[in-house]
Amino acid sequence: MPFPADRDGRPDERVVRQLAAALLFEGIVAARSVPCGGGRRFDWDCGGTAFRCRAAVGPFGRLRVAAGSVQMRAPGGVWRAADHRALLAGLPTPAAHREALLAELDRTVALCRWNDAHLVRGPRRGLAYPALDAALEEGHPYHPCFKARLGFDDADHAAFGPEAGRTFRLVWLAVAPSLLHRALPDDEEPFWRAELGDAAWGLLDRARGGFGLVPLHPWQWRTLRDGVLAPWLADGRARFLGEAGDRYRASQSVRTLMNADDPRRADVKLALNIVNTASRRSLTAHSVCTGPAISRWLTGVVGGDPRFAGDFPLTLLPEYAGVIADRDGPAGGQVAAIWRRSVPCVLNEGEAAVPFNALAVVEPDGEPFIAPWIARYGTDAWVERLIRVAVLPVWHLLVHHGIAVEAHGQNMVLVHRDGWPVRLVLRDFHDSVEYEPGFVRDAAAVPPFADINPIYRDAPPDLYYRAGSVDALRELVMDTLFIYNMTEISHLLEVRCGLPERHFWEAVERCLDDYARHHDPDGRHRRVGHRAATVATESLLTEKLLNARTELHHTVPNVTGAPAPRAVARRA
Image (cartoon, rainbow, N blue to C red; front, side, top):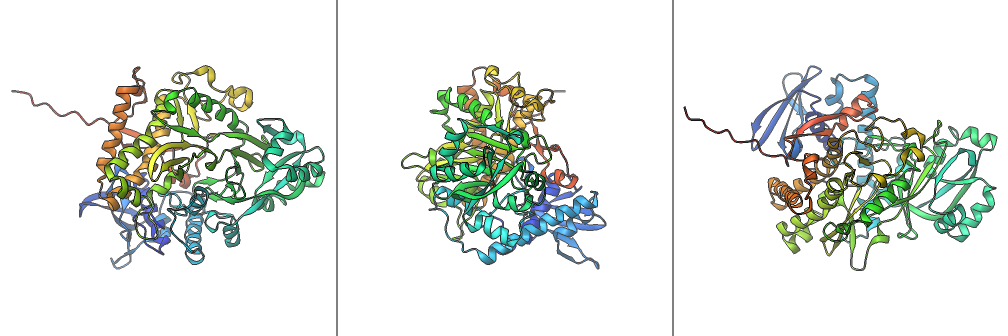
């Protein structure tokens, strides 16, 4: 079940292709480019080896590398297929970083092959949301480490990977109150009774002995019990209580778990010390108890603006509770949980939901996931509606309210009726929301971050939630929503549905222009600057190669930018 350019049974080829595309897109290698058969051929040298590939240049400079075209020159001048080790061998990066990246690439290939050997794949179009989310095995369409999951062996992948769909229960720790920070919507007993049910709550309450409760992923418990948890267990600051409560299954993000016994109950996001795609998947320690305050803020903003119910229909999935042990200590972010409303609980009669990244994939029948919807409503009508439903809620939140969200494919959910887009659902706010004090519309409503956690008090801009410029807000939205998200849909529509990508992005421009004319009387969109000729985008692979602790960026051409002015001929 691939993306449009993928070859069945060849995850190694996909890894090479995405690696080459990222090396070129981020300017990590200096390539020469010449026209070639409607696209371009790129040639570069690295560590004394010559490489080449063919690619089309898409919106924002995104490269669509042709399948099987990444080659290297072997001794004697013969060109042969390149592998990911050769592509990285000559890069000027510390050897330890290169080896770490190679381990993730190798594991990505291995787990894809495990899936090919063990999964029975069927059609996904008719699946209910939880099953569909877990079945989206494609992973990140840009990052070459799209299924690394370093830390999981094959048995872990089978037990806890979303693709296999197995269910399991959370395990529980009783932790001394002095180690805990909590942000609960109610007193402790009613919260736990509502989340766990009377039977599981009664069992855990009797066993905890006055300590606080923290759930753990079973893999995380197994990993930590002889490590950071060992001193707590030895001196009595923590006790292991075993399994309890409902069964869960992993979502496509692996660490967020969906309730398998009652899908309308909360998703639980747990710390998981695997390395997946770009980072270690523990929970950002400062954000666990800040998330509920951010959710209350955003819920108030959306609920107080009637346009989010009418013109720009938007539903949020609040993160309403968080618990973390040793927030400011060495275990910070490794023993923690966040509770979030689930997608099924916000659906009305006749509505269905799909993860936004499902819109860019191809099904086992060889047709796009969205093919029946395109056939039913027509390409132009469906695409225009999708763009309005997907773009305008995020854009209105940015332009009118001055709040930027990280709107990538896993954080967005499309609600539809028989394939016709109805509204957008957004989620995952605890560490992916930004505002700029001079641009946010209602500064009084911004959470008192310094009162929630002193770490925010003297923090510089662009470290946590406070951005240093409006440009940073634009970058977050355009980077996630456009550059690394909707470009995948526009690509699929061109190669599988016959809609040129330029037509898709012209429709996006019309949507933004229409918003400016009819919904932005103050001209705030001009401060956002989405018409700039170039924009900055995150350099995901460069960060990986350098083991960067902060975001790195490079500049790309802006497909929504104003066209260059035409030269005016002057009379002599």
